[in-house]
Image (cartoon, rainbow, N blue to C red; front, side, top):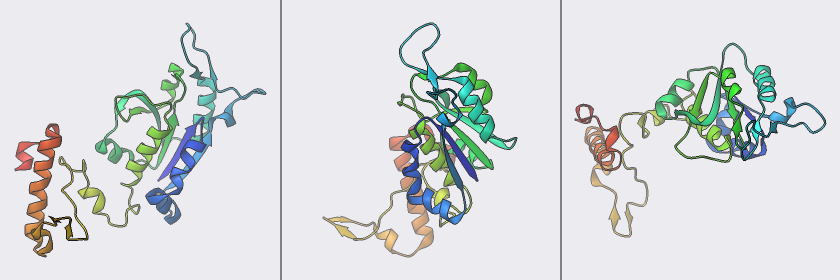
Length: 226
C-alpha cells in the first residue's frame, strides 16, 4: 500500500515515519510512504501557499489553487484522497480497516486557519481524529497512517496482533502481563501461567468485557459480550 502526505511542514512528519513499525514496514516493502512539501506547487518568487480569508477574520487559509496542483500531481484514478480536518467524520478502527483496503491513500494536511472550502471538491473524504483542534493536520495524518498501515498484510509480525487489539472487536483489549511474575506484591494471574488455552481465552474474554463495561460502556453489546 502507498501513502502520500501533502503538507506545508514536511519536517513535522518525516522523523516519526523513520521509527518503529512504520519504518520496519517500509524497509520490508509492505508499505510505501512519500512526504511532499506543498510549497513545491506554489508559484511566484515567494512560493505563497496561503492568504488572508475573504470577509476578514484571523489567521491564514491554504490556497485552493496550490492544493489542487499538488493533489492532481500525486493522485491517480485508484487513489483515495483524504483531507484531515476537524469537521471531518470521526476516525476509528473500522474506518482504518476500510482505508487499508485501498492501494493508494493521499493524506492532505490542513494548517493555519484551515483550507479554502473549494478544496473539499477535490477530495474523496474528510477525517477528524477527535473533537479538538490542532495547529495542523500533520499529527492527525500520522495517526491515520499508522492505524491504517498496521492493518496492511505483512506490516505486523503476527497477523493476529491487530485482531486482538482494542477496537478491532466490540471490546477493549484484555489486560496483558509479562516478567517479573511478582512486582511489589502484585502477582501475574495464575490462569495465565497454567498453559490451559481454553481457560486463558475465557479469562481474557471475561476481563475484556469487564474493562469495556467500566471504561467504555457505549461499546458493549450485551448479546455479544455474553
